[in-house]
Image 1 (cartoon, each protein chain N blue to C red):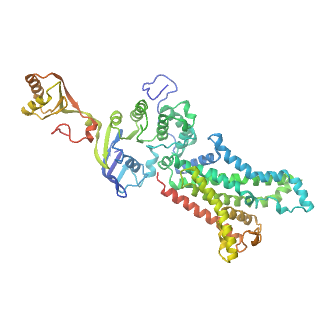
Image 2 (image 1 turned 135 degrees about the vertical axis):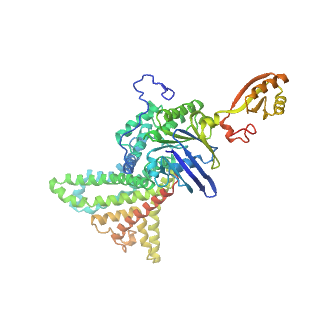
Image 3 (image 1 turned 45 degrees about the vertical axis):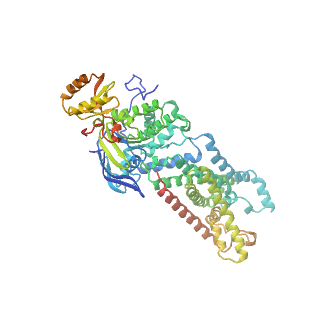
Length: 306
Length: 312
């Protein structure tokens, strides 16, 4: 069963097209949802939660329709909003316990789960203090705890690392990874930072201005690609020209020459060409594609197979 | 210290790791009940700092003070009545108590109604509720129920004090209970209706501002205007001969609740002659009761409308 499935999902706010005919099917795991600010990430999450109705198309979460079965979905989904959502004048324990009860947990179970989840996210003695006195990192943990307290099947995290320093960011990402991998909770993480997505997610959904850019396992983006990078200390122009003369697709990128690898003969050809031109060779390496390439046009090497 | 970065178990008996929840899950009514309980705690400041408890408890105390003073001096009052210096109607009783000191209950609303609805908007807690089993209508009704119950309890304190005081004053306690009970009983539905009306008004108005201060100012303005403006228009209209101007008195929440309490307690309308500025004579007590019911309907509708539209 697909975790999330959408067909022609569209959301317009008046003239603004937040989502435009989104077709998506993702399997359980840790899913990254990337896009610039305003690309439609939060809108998609809110539609999946059944909080806002789509203008057109349909979406199914855990086999349930977001319009007709919204209340059923909400029972098994945890949501961590992007913005602040914590009242300052109560303790984290009181607040998370209250949210657990709103999620349907009986009194004693709510208290037990709160203690467990707060410990899981790394809040100890300070959990009895008022939330108003917490640091941003602690607040983010409380937000994650309230989303996790009723043991959801799917977690929707909207910009979970917002406002965190690098150390806090790494801890939060680690926490997300642990939660997703060790405890078998499917997670969708929305972020505008590709680096974060790369670190924790197994599957990537990229949207741009409401349109689906791509949806595929993360390995397809970062896998070795048939492009060789040849770095020389000088004369990269001459090397590229010579390789093109030998019938290869090559172009320069600073001191590097990027060559599309079409057959094994390329290695020999590079070796011979470098020797012929007497160039100081630094390295020959297979290029990894990076996620940034997704949003960069055109592709690094002309003729590079997608 | 930090379990987040600790991936392998370090042998600590405290770190049980994450465990799935297999137990019972309750539905929407449990969520509404939980929100109701949280609202009650919020109104009275339980689980909050001491400063949050000050306003509700002090105002309830001040509201009850009149009854307590009367009880403290009841011996001299009964002497005065016996000697003819005072009449029994001068004393506070179940039916006229609210009308006499309603000011403190208005302050109670100004202080605590924004606490219930503005806080959740200000700190964006609403999305957390609406992405759970709780609906928007559920939220509005749970909040209304919390405030109504709290206000009802606060308003019943002096009633119960008067009841107990009057009983203890009499030599034959059992006989006294029998005498007082029929007078006390109608005060309960009257107080409940009044509490519901005031709560609906206060919550509906407060819900339009996420800022507590603005909501409080709005409430003060509403209650003041409704207490003064109809009265002024009525006096002017009385001279000018506008026959509709007396109906405006029905807009004043505290006035109508005061008279409606009379209706419940079976006391005739406390009519002061028109030239003394009292309630107009053309309206029967029934009209005041209907006005209370109408205010509940209107302001509950406003509250529901607000929460239907509010963005989450």
